[in-house]
Image 1: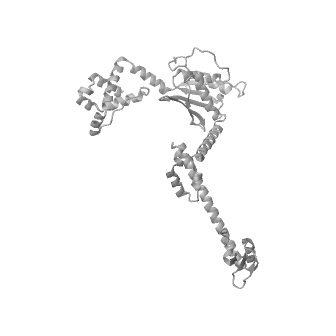
Image 2: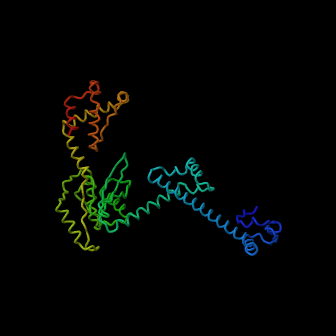
Image 3: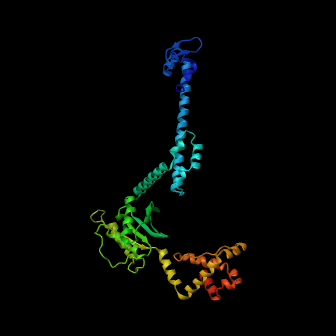
Length: 386
């Protein structure tokens, strides 16, 4: 069976497939043409039937525009769905395997009615689009950062046996501070300063950031990350030999101190120094995170014998209140389960104290298991009040 003929000229002709001929059906003509080609039939109408020729041309043009519009709409729908699938993975954190799930493909087939068009959306193609989109965003940010001073914030985090490095940066654009997240890397070695420096440089290279653009690096008070910051100042020099600087997190942090006058003087030197590769060698300032410094101060306070003893007793009571038996009692009285603090988050200790104070009446009703002396309750109220 031949291909379906879409040209509207064929409505004016009767085709004879045996003889490959076309007989004109317009009244008064009855001429037979030894061809079935649409263009030749259109020429016949143009020569002998101008009105019918005009009608055919208008109908063909209208049909062509409609088909183009439908094709264009289908292409746009496919593009939009692909973009949303990229967001589904990159922003909402859904696994790539979701794209290949049978149920998801059936949903796509309801939207993409064209045969097998939903097969163009699969985990492999979406992964490629995620990679390409990430590269485009990196290059866009790299262009924005060209010639700008930036301040980095570097943090090292651990969960179970895995370690990660997160890097943010800040820069000024149109008198506004712009904050951008530029990397989260898993660390596969010990958190030594040399290794951390290598990983930080790897992230910076992905965004074409020159070390000379870095004004400051904000980190916690760990000796390893502080040393990493100092090593960034000798990036073009040979690797340092043995040092008396400890790479552990227990180092002394008293060797770092920058006052306002030093910062102003350093800024003046940077501004007045010619910007050439031979002479421009700025000093990267290492800034200790204020929140982490406060955490260390709170930890020192909590280590005082009387406070430490009271907090230990509080944690024991809260652990009992979090058992299934007491949880049922709390639920029956429409009370919330108390919070157990995290030692590395000082604000969680305050939350723990406040949650226990709200359950003081329940603790008082079960002196055998939930007893705390009046002096402890008084101390908790003083901490909460301050």
